Image (cartoon, rainbow, N blue to C red; front, side, top):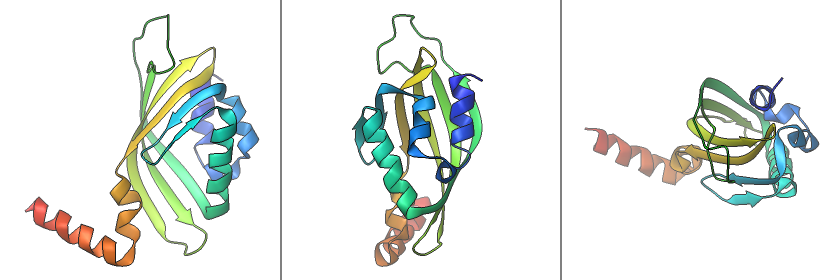
Length: 147
C-alpha cells in the first residue's frame, strides 16, 4: 500500500486513529497548511490532530477523486504531486451538529511520505456560518449575492 492509499485510509475517519499513526503517512519535516494556520514538523501535526480528537465525535472524508501531477524529480517541499478533492463530514462532541464541507488538498510526496499538505476550503462555511447570529448574516449576504 503506497502513501496515497494509506492517506485515504486514515482520512476515512480521522477520529478512529491515534496521532502517532500520522507518522505512517507524513514525513518528519512535513509542512501542513490549512486556511487557519501552518504546522511545521510531525510533532506540530500530531498536536493539531490530538486537539481535533478532543473536539470531534467523528471527522470523515469522502474522497471524490485524486489527480496525479507531473513534477520534477528534484522535488522541493512545496512541489505538488497529487490533488485530492473531498467532502468532509464533521460532528462535534459538544453539540452533535453536523458540518459538511467540500475541499481540496494538495499533496507533495517524497520517499513514500507526504512532505507537503495544503488544504483549500471555505473557512466561512466551516466556521462562521455555524455561529448563530453571524451565520444568519453570512447566509443572508450569500443569498443576496446569488440573485
